[in-house]
Image 1 (tube, helix red, strand yellow):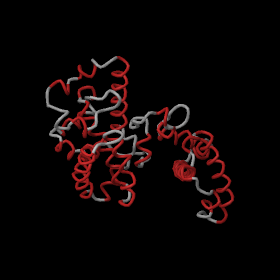
Image 2 (tube, helix red, strand yellow):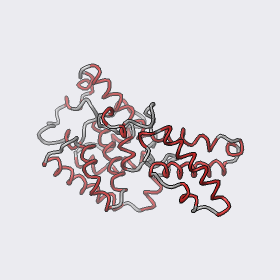
Image 3 (cartoon, one colour):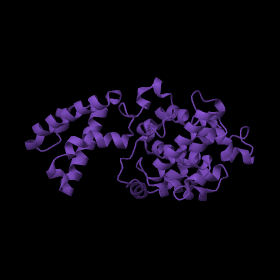
Image 4 (cartoon, one colour):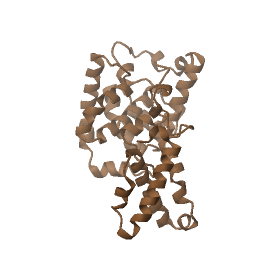
Length: 282
């Protein structure tokens, strides 16, 4: 078992690496790993479990657990364990959390347009099996994708939309891999994997900080409709800043009387993003 991150199903459940012995799932074995490594492993598992259960990445937990069922079947584990994570997080095996992590990553991967998936396969492999995957790793990944894609294609667009109604932004594939609970690359070598800003905020936390100037006025705070409109606008400015877009071009999509104000506000918000999160600015 890796102490760097939760074990990948593609490595932990490899026939040559996993023998179904009780020790493989015994929490005492994990606890016996060398001090700091074991603590880091347990911390990542706890953080990941919380993020998944609370739907922080934009997918409700119950639909995600149902989406993960093919993974549990593939690796001959009890899918019912996934539904114990909310009520008994300490009693759920590491492998259950690893499969749910994989399910969320695959949800994001299959949410990509089909034309974009081929370009992100290397990032997917790095997340699930590690850097420099072997030929056997690629074969395992292809088999996993084939199994899960059938389940994804059977889901109706309305089901996916409802599952993503969490009150949190739905993290796209790249943003999900950059989330502190999911990232597995060496943070010191890749600023894009280090969270947002010097505090390594999650995207949800970073979006909230970014949006503050738009939400501070009493008019917005006391009017639910104005508050929702400000949040939506903050999301637009966030996307504009991440993409390196043109504030003036953005403003042209608004009514003529609002364009100058929106362009000025967009410029301020893009500048705010670059000041707060320069490592993520386009």
